[in-house]
Image 1 (tube, rainbow, N blue to C red):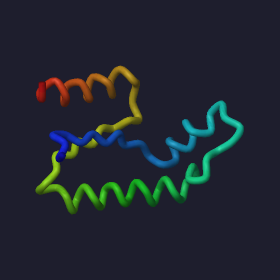
Image 2: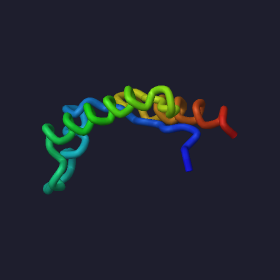
Image 3: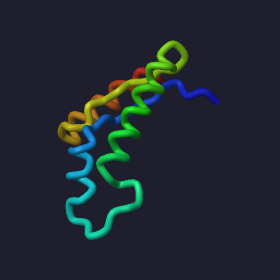
Image 4: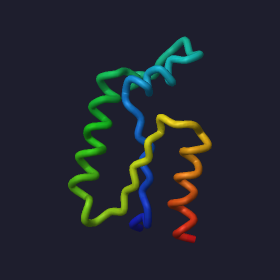
Length: 80
């Protein structure tokens, strides 16, 4: 099944590392700046390749929970 909408919550790898390491003693294998940077680049490459066949909305996740959740809801409520 093809999704009607893909939502990507985008956060700079550096900011992701700040959030990941806050209050934690141990990191998972792939929780490092290089891996997060590479993965983010790969997602954006995929979005470019699929731009004509997939509905992808990129949301800036470096904002308050309220702003992010409102933006997600605004995208979703138009589909229901």
